[in-house]
Structure formats: structure tokens, C-alpha cells
Amino acid sequence: MKALPPVRRPVPLNRRAVRKPLGTAFAGWSARVCGSGTEALALALADARRRLPTATPEVILPAYGCPDLVSASVHAGLYPRLVDTAGGGRWGYDLDALERALSPGCVAILAVNLLGTGDQALELRRLADARGVALIQDSAQHLPRQLPAEWAGDYVVLSFGRGKPLNLLGGGALLHRPERAVSIASSATRPVTGPLERPLLKRLAGLAFNVATHPVAYGIARRLLGSSVGGTRYEQLETVCIASPAKVAEVERGLAGYESGAGYEASMWSAACAAWASDGVEMLSCATGSPAVEEVRLRLAMLAPDGRTRDRIVAALERKGLGATAMYGTTLERLDGIPAVIARQGPFPNAAVLASRLFTLPTHSCVNPAVLRETQLLVTRLLRHQPALETQEAALEQLVRYRGQQECHQRNERRIEQ
Image 1 (cartoon, rainbow, N blue to C red):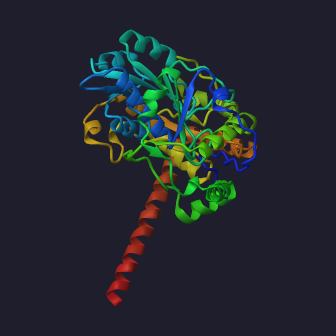
Image 2 (cartoon, rainbow, N blue to C red):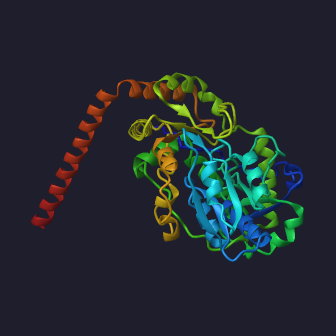
Image 3 (tube, rainbow, N blue to C red):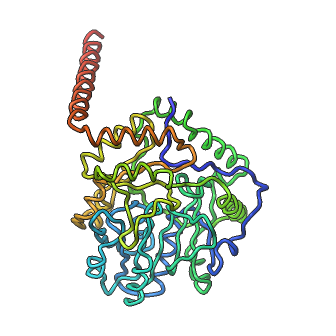
């Protein structure tokens, strides 16, 4: 009955908890708290556009990633130019392709830290300086355990939504240099509003989230609602909001608790990673860094030998409620609802291979030794006994189709009788 959610960090509910001021947590930066991480990115992009005026402003984005990268770019009035990712099962840009994509209208390069894997920031910093463009570090999926931290960008984007390292059920922050404060403030159009801004409703929502993502409750909901709730789809960003003083205080309390609370520990998967390596399953590493499984990671990104094997791994682990996902599943230009200006770009062969091979494993505090053992054994058996499993899967698919046909036939008979 139990099932693990892919990510789980309980919402902090103690409104009297100690606070870590933004100026202390992000020393050397100014912080603008806003409605979401997407809004924070839109603020950074709009300011980068003002810093380097051009008739045709563009921003460089990786061809694999969250569609919110595109919606923030469009809202800021920039053309999102996708660039292929690095080859060889690594995360980051193909730097040669990136250099070829840099046009006279480029105003920013986006460095995305995928689930804590890394973002090539030091290499991209040198490239951005050489071309005179801004470097924006999208760290929505990674918040260092110890703050303040070192960032190489001109801007840093953080997110506090559900499924993010610090979960406050919403909100985001843009870190920027103090001299850009007036310019950035001009881009926020209105204060954050909504039911979750009311303290009581916020507390109830947090309590509901904490209960709903417990493995028992999550497993029950999964059985009732199915396992394919949600999905990755492009949504247009309508506005950028500034946060209230109460929201800023909530963020400061969250930051203080983040450092001392149970986090996302990828090192728990060290033994499994070592066992799978000989069968062609490897941990995703940054293109300009070595893999380090001891780092804090929102989810552990892994690469299967090929797309078919990835799909089998995810399906098998998902049936057991072990919290595996296929992440976005495809490249950015092929996601549902993506604007035509993005859909026409490509192809991006490296990103396509990455999208087909990548799967994630949970790293939150509900992953216990039993989960680790079951996952390791299940994946190992699947990798080493694929022919037998293929036969079983084909038989299962045939049975499902047969039952579906039976149900359809029965419904038709009932309509005829009526």
C-alpha cells in the first residue's frame, strides 16, 4: 500500500521558528522574493535585456529542461534559443554548439543546475565575459545545505515551490548584485495575492501536503487516482509578483530550518550505483565535473544503457511504488503546449538521447534501507534477465488489452439492452 513520492520535504509549520535573514543567507547579494521561481527567472531575464539593449534579444537555453524556462523567457520578451546538451551521458551544454548559437542579439546564457548535478557555471562565466552577456544560474532544483554559498553568475534563481529543495508551497527568489536593485524592482507588477497568503489557510495547506506525501497516504492516493497524475506541459507566465513582508519572513524561517533539517542525501545510493555500473547504468554527471554521489541532490539522476531499458526500469520501480520517474521524458521543443517558435527548433541529438535514457531515484528521508535493497535487486534482475522480463511484460500488456476489450464489449451490450 505504501508508495514513495519522487520528492518529499515537509512544509515547515512553526511560525515562531528562528529566522535566517536574507542578508545573512545570501551575503554579497541582494535578494528579491517573488511569487515563484519562474517569476524570479523572468525578473533576471528582463534585467539582462535592459543591461544590453538590442532589437532582437535572445537567451540561450538547454534543449532539455523544464518548460518554465521558456515561459519566463517569453514573458521577458526574449527569444529562447535552444542549444544541444553535452554528449556522452553528461549534463550541460555542448560548448561548441553554444558558441555557434551566440548571435549579436544574445543578452544572457542560462546555466541550469539539474537536480543538483551541476551547471558548468565556471566555464560559462568565461564564455559570457568574452561575449559581454549576462550569466544566469537557475538553481531552482538545488539549494546548497550551507549558506551563504558561492555562485559565479550575475543572477541566481531559487524556487520554494512543491517538489523543490526548500518547500514552502510556492514562492521564489532572485539573487542579484546590489546595483541592479532599482532596475529589478521596476519589473515586478503587483504583490502576491491568493488564499495561501492567509496564515491559517497556509498552515492548513502545509499540513495537508505533509500528510498527503507520507508514503502511506501517497500510496493510497496513487491506487485511487492512478500513477500518471500531472505531467510536464508548457504554461504561459502571466505576471511577476513581489512578495509580502510575511512571505519574506516565511522564507527566512525556511532557510534557517533547511540547514538543520533532514535533506536530500544522494550518498545513500552509493552501493547501488557501484553494483549497476557493470550493467551499463551510470549516474548523470556534469559535463565539466566528476560524478560525486555524496552531494545533496533533489533526486538522483541516472542513465540507463538505452531508452527501452530506461522505460522498463521506471515501469518496474513505479509498479512497486519506489519513487522512480522518467523526468521530462523528451526534449524541450517537443513538450506539450510549447510555442511554435520553440517547436520549430532542432533537432538536438544529444538532448534526445539524454531524455530517453534518464531516470531519477528519490533521495528524501523516507528512503530507508529496505527501499534501497528492493530497488537495487529489482534493477539488477531487470538488467541481467531482460529476455524473460520482456516475455512477462508482453504477456501483461496482452492481458490488459484483452480486459479492456472485454469491458468495452460489455459496455456496448449494456447500451444495446437499454
